[in-house]
Length: 398
Ligand code: NDP
Image (cartoon, rainbow, N blue to C red; front, side, top):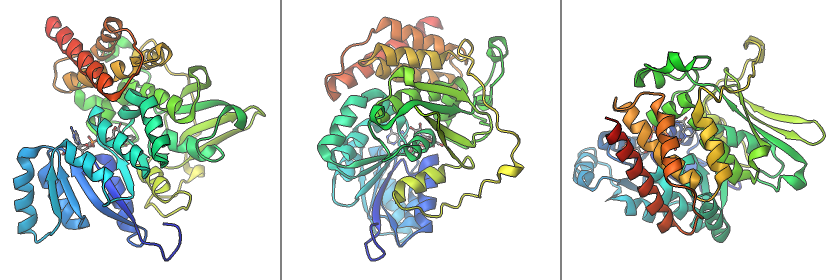
């Protein structure tokens, strides 16, 4: 919203039933004069989507699974909610491109969010990017779409949002801004400090118990393996134009310093705050203004001394693999991402040990060497090939 008389921003919340979706809707509900949730989408959690529609009264609700459209309609009719209903992935992309929203929160998990994220970029709307997998897969294509659409991307991932806040003008040319390095902080996840032997038998429940953040299961496992940080390194490369050598990862167990920017004069700027995604979401929704987010103030005096340490790349190999994929270039990050999604799914289903996640990702990267990124269609074919390779390797290992 540009002035006190402007209409509220109409926000499409993709992945509304998820962790980021819920935090976004919480911020939106605090500022009805500034923001309105005009489109809500989910995959298959029809009960949760219906509840959100009852609470937030969007213009359109989209359920990705078409077999659930009837049930969504019945639930909304019973609750007296009058909003349009659609289903299928194309309906999500269509909603993003249409006139019902001017802001899109891309918070679908995984590669399933790619098409809608690209569509939002092409339309020139404000894109709040949480779905890191889409920029990891298709960084150059997403940047092209953004440039063609003329819209703005504000990162929601807390590390990238922190960097955005520490850079002059958000996403400048790093070299001419005097930036030497971007320093991404990582909590280290629930298994920080453990040896490989100690990780051999860890369960999905243990992996999903993050010490500082409450998140969806996929990103929780990614945090435990440090693949999440690896994906974020690739995301930072694309968002800020930083070379792999200019991106450092530091483990910071308290998750209070969300990331830092080091300048050539020795200055290091950091963004701090309690670990609550509503800060980054509120910043991205209101930018360049600031709005209250419901987050408790940071009490620095009460915090234990802030600690930083180097990540253990030999134990948490996924981070090293992500750097390797970034350096290989082309579609290697997309191959990494696809293999990781299959591996995490298998781990969560009890079909792969925790340490097997990195092994599987490495095998797929070896089997499918990097190719140039040409277009979305080719990228989707490579994504499929990587998933097939990962599933075959998994089957053969059983
Ligand atoms: P959740 O698992 O909590 O939520 C995922 C959302 O995506 C749900 O609304 C789900 O719908 C929807 N969804 C899942 N699969 C599909 C599909 N095939 N088509 C359409 N919609 C789908 O995830 P998070 O909120 O934790 O994460 C969302 C994204 O944000 C991820 O990319 C993650 O990496 C990123 N992120 C998350 C952070 C966090 O704190 N959680 C922090 C920074 C980034 P349904 O409920 O119906 O299954």
